[in-house]
Image 1 (tube, rainbow, N blue to C red):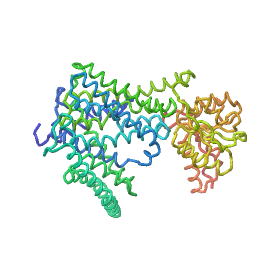
Image 2: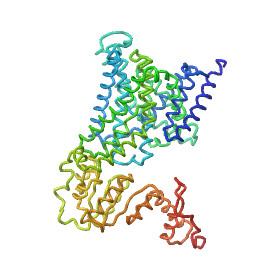
Image 3: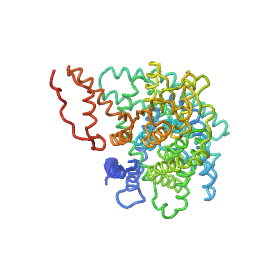
Image 4: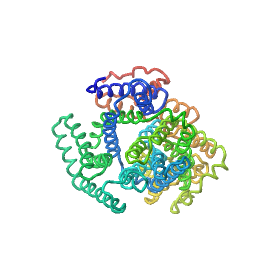
Length: 596
């Protein structure tokens, strides 16, 4: 292969193999990221066949890092973090500290210097944003209490790694790596670095916050989509390179804050949509280039080291997260979901490992162990979620074990003092106060219908109580919580929680306490809806079907069609499930639909 065509060959082979192996991973119900890393292994120097140009791959990977960090900044939500700050902030910091300590101790047992051990532990401490969000989305948990905690936790981890990218080069000499140029004291070097970062942030948040949205708005008014997309890429790459050249900070940090600045503008959603194809393409090349650095022989030559690495990621981190969430008096289910979500490592680990190699703080052997841990933990993540579900069922089957694990929530598990509990008769019990439950609670309050909210997000319960709303903190699948809500005297149970297994447990306990209670339940599939309605639920609502009915109602009004919407609803429920292809029957033409 001629040198002039090396870039084309690398792109063709890299994208082609990434597509094939990513598609195969998807069919096996694994994250495509596994396939991308394996594609890199296939074109790397440690496997036979085509070998990609490592220098070109490194530069493409750098662009991938810039766009990845730009995307992280673009989707950064301070509101999401503040909503769960009381557990996510201390929890993430404690877990990072514990995982770094476990990694450093293990590395020390292998004979590594402490500095290399610290960097190795840092690489194992942070979860993959891509994998975590995909896992939560597949299980419908993004808007759940545990999903919000996991996402807030991940935001703190990302911010901590951004800080690590800034400080590691300065502290490299102390940790046994290549010291920064110019010598001098470490304190002076740290102070100078922090001054440069502060100056960069001042420029971005004082000047950039005004200039960048103005630029994007000016370009948007031209009506040219390609110019708008080009402006997004120019800002992302320009700020990253400018930050490195003028302020001495990393490309990654510059790109992250470029994304944060754009996220505050009115055009942030359009910017995210236009940048996404480029971000996805170069992110794939980033993972391919990382895979090229992985030496598969480490699996055979150092199996115990690989096992120790994987155990820290899957078991060590999970147990720490589990203990932290339970210590904050959250339910077992929340603790298990959060710990399963974080039981993997990904893109930030690769970035840190690459920086460690550059600074002499990590050997190629250590980098291969990090990559092996990432590949195996990401592959095993669906199994970890399955194990979490099984453990939850075992805990729920043993009231003593559940009571031992879940600390009493104190006053939050009981109704506020201002609520007239004796007067709670014929009320509604609302499980969940998220995007679905909150509007329901508002509508009930507006009509003067008494209700009690049961929510698993501690901060949300505290906020509701501050507004004078009757709210309880706890897992409604535990009978004690429902008793505090006086379900035995309630008229209606509204389950807006997205998890089907939890909904079934809640309904089972509710029927034992109040066999005559009416219930309406949120669900995500027609199969689950049919099962719930067969078991006596008054109404099981499939979100997509209700959305379709709202659109049908509006479309009929536009065309002047008069139709019995009850009949239309019954017809719609008979259509095949768009996700499974299965349904209650084939839809027939709606009678009178052609009549004016």
